[in-house]
Image (cartoon, rainbow, N blue to C red; front, side, top):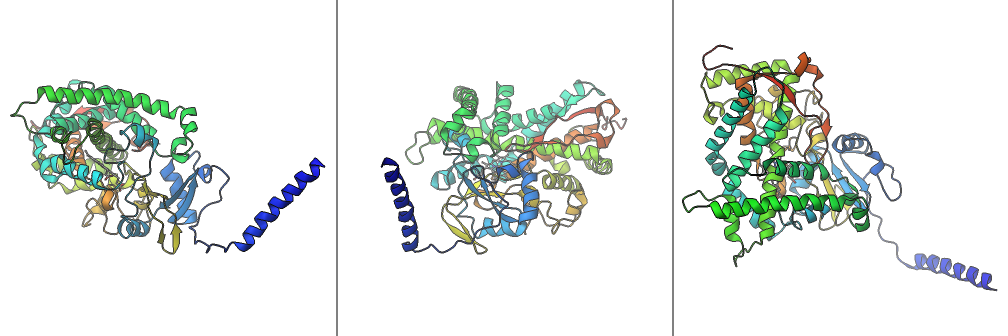
Length: 497
Ligand code: HEM
């Protein structure tokens, strides 16, 4: 009797849903973007297993199109891989996609998304961006830090000289320290006591925030963030970082005299607890962290990749060094004016950005209302990845796209962005990098110094094409292996070498 009532109940449930589906008017069918085949729960994640994400996504786009949909765990994502669609989205739909998805990193590392990079689009974000641009990042301010850059480059040159010609040095470490010093002196007037610890924190954060971890693909499954240990890892890093930034701030408050030049940190502290645009201590710390998180490795990896490409391409290395030594004319110390018109140096840097954009997928964005792109329906809260790595190699726009050819920028109007969105190392639209001027200044002079005073070769007589170029994926893509090279000092000043 009991079995019969269970069967009867089951039949009633099936009939109910059948009836409901018949009487409910069917919703108009959505026009959905092309996508690869998917499997339950993880969606399309299996297509990326074993790949470096920007390369894996470029391969998928070649099969499924430059505007495709991917279900990454529970996150519906669109991936843009051509200049045409990047232009359309970063212009026509820029405001719709001006938000950032909420992430575990944003919550833990940058004090509940209160920095600039992760802050939701709106007044708070606008004000912070304005303060940083006004006090640190605009062209005039960047120019005002010229002597600071020259001093730091000069001390790096002397450190390398002192370490002895002919001995291998960890160039990755030297470059990273140099950029950290320049950014810290520009942001709060002096170096950081715990520079090494802080640098490791920034690197580790960048490594952990590539955007393809469990917490990124299952943001609502909080238990997984605990289970995988990701929350604990990020919290541990955050606690260390918080202490270092606290000590930077208290140091500055104690040492600041009325005669010293006001820095970005001083301005932020002035805004703290102010009625008009009151910032909390955490807000100030989040912005200070941003200047390091967004401003150090982005520049240092470009210098590393540029030298790596030059080592692999002796023709370009020789041409650049000859032009550089001619431009500086045997002076003992390089000043920025000496290299400001050195176009070949700029082409080398542009070509490095093209082949190695430090943020190959920019920083993910999210749309905050449903929209239609090229007739395709995009749902609210869809995540956007712009694959700049693929765009910078689009064969429709770039001849011989995989080769390192700085001359391609001769007579080209491209500066930090291509007019057809074929070149986007700093992103585009409202969320475009505000630190481009500072980033470029922090690359040009160090690179010029390293190539003016020294010749470089691989340790143990390695041939130039043996240099390993493997990438390590993270929010910023670095070399997997440190760049270890042997310098030979060139005594340019008195002409002997
Ligand atoms: C070579 C150097 C640099 C590169 C390649 C670079 C690249 C980028 C990219 C691709 C973005 C994301 C843009 C987007 O979502 O469309 C970004 C954002 C940002 N960058 Fe840079 N950046 C560099 C240097 C700097 C420097 C020196 C600073 C400051 C000290 C900085 C601060 C920021 C900030 C605050 C954002 C977030 C902007 C926002 O969300 O509104 N960057 N950067």
